[in-house]
Image (cartoon, rainbow, N blue to C red):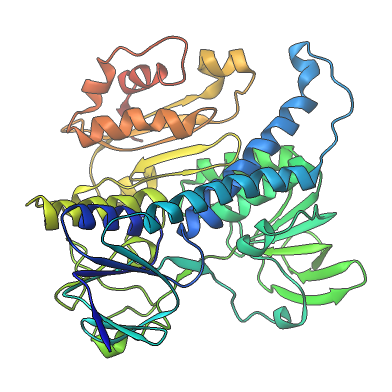
Amino acid sequence: MTRHFDAIIIGTGQAGPSLAARLTAAGMTVAIVERHLVGGTCVNTGCMPTKTLVASAYVAHLARRGADFGVHTGEVRIDMAKVHARSRKITLDARNGNESWLRDMDRCTLLFDHARFEGPHSVRVGNDLLAAERIFINVGGRAVVPDMPGLGEVPYFTNTSLLETDVLPEHLVVVGGSYIGLEFAQIYRRLGSQVTVIEKGSRLTGREDEDVSAAIRSFLEAEGITVRTEADCIRFTRHAQGVTVGVTCAQGGPDVTGSHVLLAIGRRPNTDDLGLDRAGIKIDGRGYIGVNDRLETTVPGVWALGDCNGRGAFTHTSYNDFEIVAANLLDGGDRKLSDRIACYALYTDPPLGRVGLTETEARATGRRLLIAKRPMTRVGRAKEKDETTGFMKLVADAETRAILGAAILGTGGDEAIHNVIDIMAAGGTATTLAHTMHIHPTVSELLPTLAGELQPAG
């Protein structure tokens, strides 16, 4: 028997539930299918639990520095069970809230099972066949577990499994020197673990400018994290103390032995078992679903939102996908993916806030550029907080003074970057930013000053 709905949503990440709410409010009947946990990556294994751990780690770090501020405390002790319980509670509260919202939503049917396409507009869910004119895929992604020598013979964590435990590793070896790996590396170092980061590339955060990468490495090493780059022979073997990870770098020993290993090598979309071929939905070589500027797939009436479409791997891009689809489908809008400005953050301490092009990317365009850079040592609020690590950088077009990109690596950088995002989104220029009055004392108040210091790139 076939169950008919006006719309089917596969996945309950950041786009799915909000889309269900809009569609049902418009009078449509909606089936939303989840095979695991409501809330997707952000709620369960991403933003919420990890940033909760970041907060605990920051408190531990600040407590150890109390004497620097004239505040004397006793020995700092970590109750990892309580750290984990706090993170777990925040996740469960959010998950349960989302699930209750969907269960109580009029005209919405929440199903827990695996969804597989059987045709362009039909989906098998358990024993039921669901049919709808509109289908929305919001299945997210998962950690990459590559076929590396010896990996199948040793225990290891991914970000998901590490968040499920309250173990505090004696020595955590993080394989992967990019965003997820570095956040966990600093978290566990501040909570008391010895930490080594192993990166195959020549530097950490390889997509960032070299000065950003160098600064991140510098402050992580200053906290006692060992960084091994140019790891040209990563391999794994069991050891009495845990796991030995082969490195064979140009400098340092040929391997590292730790009590635990975290794989943070990348993400892949959850598209390999959806039966997309039966629907005629095309994917690329990495498994991402191809979409156009309106998030429509190659099959009319089927959309792909969130991490699975390869057009952004963040909660905010997934939610923006929902906004684009809802506006176009329900409000007569004409919103496009190409209209949005790329932005994201790395939640180390200090954090990195990024928008638009890096300096390296801007130089590659061949344009004449204006660039300004200011160290956080020249930011009053940073000095008052005694958190002066990092810098802020602005890149603009020399002819139009349009802002092309910015990086704020420093205290409050993940918040202050929104000043630049908003100026860019509103079509303002570096002159607009330079002439805008900001509140003192803040990190943001130095952005107009930075814009006023733009000079031709060398």
